[in-house]
Amino acid sequence: MKLSDFDFDLPETLIATRPAKPRSSARMLVCDGEEIHDQVAIDLPEWLQPGDRLVLNDTKVIPARLSGERPRMGPEGETRAKMEVTLLEPQADGCWVALLKPLKKIREGEVVEFSAALSATLEGKEDGQARLRFNLMGDDFDAALAEAGAMPLPPYIAAKRAADAQDNEDYQTLWAKNSGAVAAPTASLHFDDALMAALQARGVTFTHVTLHVGAGTFLPVKVEDVTTHKMHAEWGQVTEAAAKEIAATKAAGGRVIPVGTTALRLIEGAARAGEIAPWEGETDIFIYPGFQFNVTDALMTNFHLPKSTLLMLVSALMGKEQMDRVYAHALREGYRFFSYGDASLLVPAQ
Image 1 (cartoon, rainbow, N blue to C red):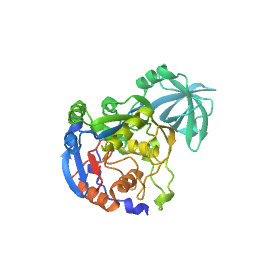
Image 2 (spheres, rainbow, N blue to C red):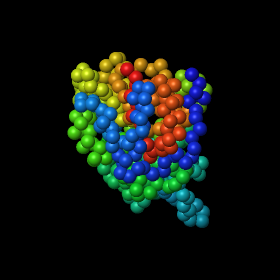
Image 3 (cartoon, helix red, strand yellow):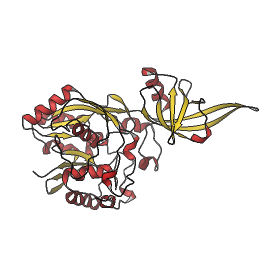
Image 4 (cartoon, rainbow, N blue to C red):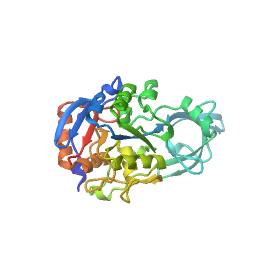
């Protein structure tokens, strides 16, 4: 299985830089077995049955992009150098792993000031990344970060425009609860109050799980033999209550449909023994064609990068040839791609 098998030409004009308004007005391609239909996200209830269960990732994106200054005393007095920081993931010892630019211009023990309230000390450098210890913790840290930080837009959006205040709302899901992600579970961005009400009226149920999406989700696959690719690890949790809800739906004959590849990877990781079970920890599960799905019956997701692990995941679910047809149709019909783009509902043939 070669990396080139998952490549395609994507016109720049199809990369969305803003979401649809309202959220549920985004287009939605439905692939039901062999058939492809052009729909809108608000039509989702029509494609679901009473008793189906949507699995939702309730991670909350933190404003992980920070601009600050590094003060330094020298023979001529204080000098200040601009520093750009992107938080990647928290560590057990309270530090954060982060990208810091320019990393070569700062020494261990030096402080970066982001605001009057928020600063961080460089504790170390490793593999081109920084270890930062902030001056605040807990709710105080969250509040100061909310004031000083900006949303960490994906590279393909950030290259086209800077994050702004609108992204604070647009790049957060309706049910975001547990802080820790530096990228949004973007399939969930199509849900608004109108769609949730319509789903509830249809008899669809919901289960929340948590997977803190890391910046590694945007890392390219660099090996030609995709089976040798090493996935980044992300922290996730499937509670006992969530596992029971999913198991009950399966037992009753309902379908379990994760919203987004993050929710799918988490529940399949928690079901490697064959059945869903409570789970907590770091997962680096890599799903590519040939994978045996134990829980997932269908998937709602966005359109993904060429040569990405996420494109490999949907190909594992639907079959490579069918996903080639889906993406050819999406390109031909002008669907919008990536985080702020349109949706797809993928239902494998029985």
